[in-house]
Image 1 (cartoon, rainbow, N blue to C red):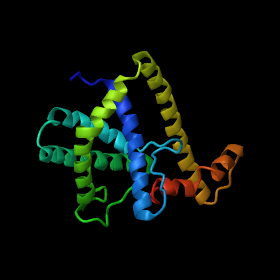
Image 2 (tube, helix red, strand yellow):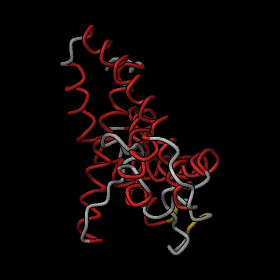
Image 3 (tube, rainbow, N blue to C red):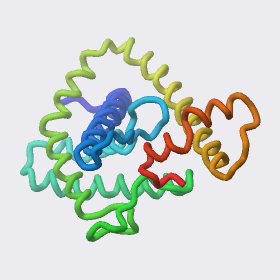
Image 4 (cartoon, one colour):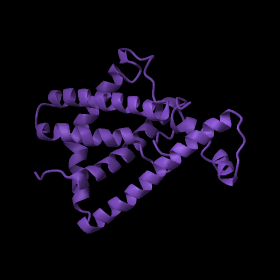
Length: 208
């Protein structure tokens, strides 16, 4: 088994983010009877916590992938919980809010993680490292290395733009909610597209 490089982890993050968006979307339809856009960015289906989780858990689980599933569950339980806790903390530190709150769930820690979702991380870790990761790695290996390196540059530029644009949308939506009128055409565009209603759907009403 070859050693994983940044190249592998980049595509792992990308695929994990899209997979997480799909998974959360299906969950919202089943539980809430509506599609909630659980993306971290306003453009594209990128649920970053799953992307980061895919990278962290792969690094932690890869050498144990042939071990008993209970061991994989425990590693995933702990690793996923740490990822979720620190991403919630980081999001609140940078943006002033977090996109989830488990305060009403049994055995939660500061509303950032809880027993139920930590168990889900444990189960997902088993499914990921046993079945999904091997398929994903085969897919990555089929990408022409030269093409793959160029795509990393292009996609990285897009993601940085998307992150900065998302931050602008949040700032403008908060201003709009305070009754501050748009000052130009660009702000009017944001008010009519990536507005408060759009962001509340993305961040489950926790973004304010």
